[in-house]
Length: 109
Image (cartoon, rainbow, N blue to C red; front, side, top):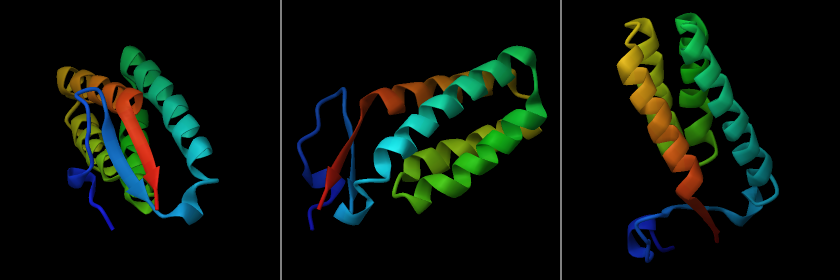
């Protein structure tokens, strides 16, 4: 099985390799992550740190479950940033999440 590091990746892509049996689930998963991004942006704009913490916690749990370790990693950082009321750090992580969602490419095996 090729690893993501073995696949050619352009500067604008980040590749996630998943089992073919997840193929039907992933479009809805990605769409839900995009909706989540909008929730994160809204919560940050309103200064709702508790909501940001909850969203980060959910991201941390669900990302790796579907093979999207980066979602889990960013979720953990968002959860920590929310606990510290770190608006600047949260804005940076949310922007990073938006960039990730825009460039992630899924390969099924």
